[in-house]
Length: 178
Image (cartoon, rainbow, N blue to C red; front, side, top):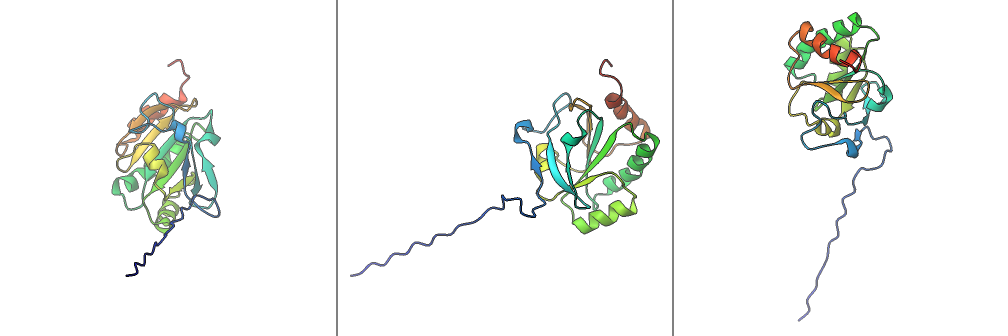
């Protein structure tokens, strides 16, 4: 009797190299379970924008940042965009608006951003890494980040109106003594 054995070796290669990958990367040291809360440091990340450029949160160090997670298929996100555009124009230069498009078809996101005249950087989070690092559990979510990199306000839903937006903005644009 002859026993023939065979071993099949299957290797699954990850896509950890950066050769043309548009995957988002997050500084893991900055990530905590449940994502950052008010008073925590905002996790740094690097991602590719919808227009093909690299963007990192850290490039805006020392500036107030509003970080908004959205998708073109999300109706509350769609309702927020005019508010963001209007407030950014109203407070020109007072802060940086940075969008993160999440779980979306990139061509749909580009089309929507173009229709909305969103002229701020919008990162594509196709790998879901940034969304997870921020502990996001739905869309939209918005983080108001102080110039020192800490979270001042976290909205778990759409910002209801300009008055509420301006309250959050005041918390990141006023001096650190307030």
